[in-house]
Image: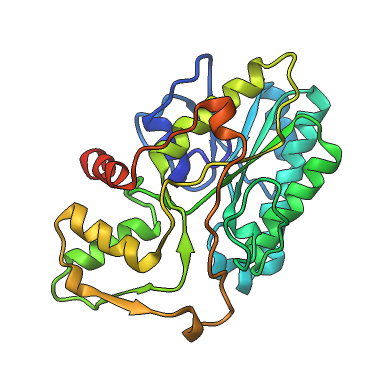
Length: 295
C-alpha cells in the first residue's frame, strides 16, 4: 500500500482485517504499531519504484499516496501532476504486467459541484488541479488497465497520526483554543463526509471482493459517500457538539469570497456499494462519537 503513513493509511492500520503479509510504502514519516512492514520509497523515482515492486512481488496494490492539498496542487501543477498522475500510472503499469488488482483511491473532487448528487455514472468535470489529476488517472485506468478499480472517497473525517495536517484535527484545535481566532467554515460548500474509519473498513472489503472474485464482472468505479449531505458550517457545528467544544467560535464563510473557485456541492451517492458490499455506514453522529472515543 502506498501512502501507508498518511491519514487514510493510519486509519487502515487501526482497522486492518486483511490476511497475509502487508507492506506499507512511505516517504517522510511512519507511525508505530502498524500491521505491516515498512519500505521507504520516493514515488518520483520511477526506476526505484519498479525495482522495489519486483522485489516485493505484491499480490495486490492499494494506491492511497497523493499530494492532496488542493492549494499546493494549484500553486505547483507540474510537481503535483508528476506525483498524482505519472507515479500512479507507474504503479498501475506494474499491476497490469503482473495481472494483479490495483485499487486507486480517488476523490469527489473529480466533479465540478454543479450537478450533485453524483453517482458512479455521473459525468466528471473537475474545477481544480487536484481533481483534474485524479480524473486523468481514472481515465487512463478505465481505458487500458483491466485489473484497476477506482474508489472515490468523499471528505474524510478523523484525527490521524500526531504529524497529520488534516483539517479535522486543525478544526478541533481551533475550537478548543479559547484565546484563538474564530473558525471560518463555508456555509455554501456541501459534501457527504465519511469517517476515515468507515472508509478504511469498506476499502478493505472492496479489495477482498476484487481479489477473490473469479466469475462476476465487477464495476470499475465505486463511491463510498457518507450518510448525510451537509455544509462545512454544519459539520463544524456537529463536531463542536460531539466533542463538547464552543460552537460560538464558528463563523460562517462563503465560497464567493475565495479564489480559485471551489466546487459548491460534491455530495455523492453509490449505485453499487450497497449491492456488493452491504454498504451502510454509521450515522454521522455515531461516526463522530467513534472518532472521539478512538482518536
